[in-house]
Image (cartoon, rainbow, N blue to C red):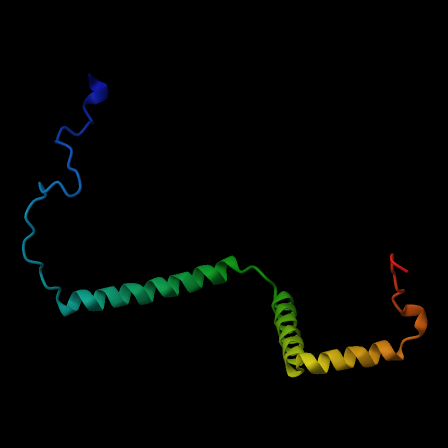
Length: 112
C-alpha cells in the first residue's frame, strides 16, 4: 500500500463539465508589480547578453574575419541588385559573342 500513498484521491475534473469553482473578482495589480516585472525583464535581457558573451569564445581575429565576410557578402548582393535581368542577359550575350566557336553548343537533331 505504500506505493499508492502519493496518489491524489480527489475526483477527476474535466474541462467544460460545469463543475469548476466560481471565479471571483480579479485583483488589480499595483504599479509596484509592473515596475518589478519591468526590472525583471531588463535584468533577464542583461543576463542573456552576458551568457551570449560567455558562450562566444571567438578570438578577435575570428570576429574581424566574420565581419569582413559579411561586408563582402553585402557588396556582392548590392552589385548583383544593381543590374536588371535585361542588362545581365545583354552582358552574357556579349560575353558569348566574344568567345570562339569552339565553345558553341553543337546542334543535336534526331530528325535530320
